[in-house]
Image (cartoon, rainbow, N blue to C red):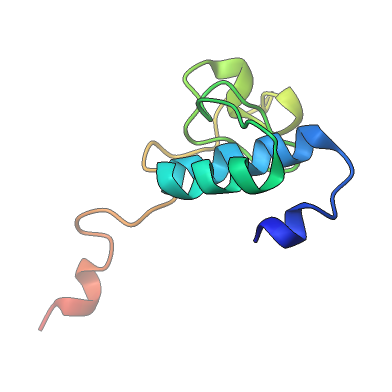
Length: 95
């Protein structure tokens, strides 16, 4: 992974990638930081993304893609961030 990341010329992109990996594994993020020589951010909650939402954002301005809040529906992002929840597939288990 770090070999592919080293081909990226923009340090900001590497910082963001490491931060996303940190949400999966602190150990993995630490190894990537050591291998690339780039320190990622501490947390993903303060980041905003282009083209997708940040379901981990705590501040509303960071939640939406490109910092653009949907004007008609305000928030089209479900509380469960699109993940299945209890009862989602209930109809398939009825006899």
